[in-house]
Image 1 (cartoon, rainbow, N blue to C red):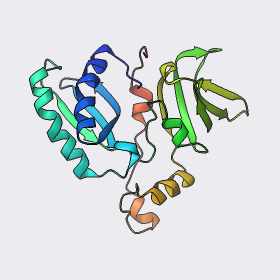
Image 2: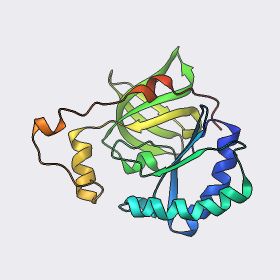
Image 3: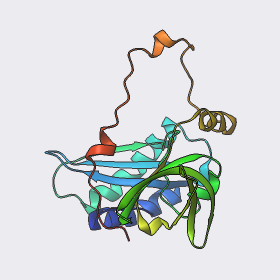
Image 4: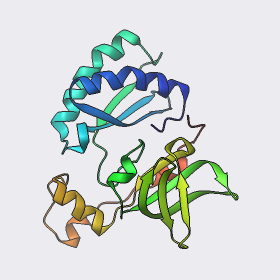
Length: 198
């Protein structure tokens, strides 16, 4: 799994068995700094089955005793458990194989020819890593251990796939005015620091 720090590795070793014990899988784990650290855990039902708010609440309740006992973050912190969402992060071997044909954006831990960020379409995944057809029609092959982040790109095709799989939350009435007050926050792409991947 893509993790950025030693602290995140320790946390993952604590929370993963708890999640597996209730039939869930950890998709991503991040500790974000600030005056009050924020522990963000994205999880889904085993095998990618549709996951809802109740599943997240169940996992949060299951994790609390383990985290309280281990005290892995020395100061007070906020725990957030959520689903991966439609434009989900891809963090584990096998994630790319599930989403062949969909657009993805990847950031590598170390640059190739001076470049770290790539966008393209997933064409496969094998023992060499994920295979991505880039916008310039060349192919990128990279393993999870070489990435600092990867996520699906929100497209109409992805929304349709999520709807077909039962992973699309209830939607508001479709009119543009109902969406006019929403803004997209892309700050995470710009602000989140990357580190070594193992």
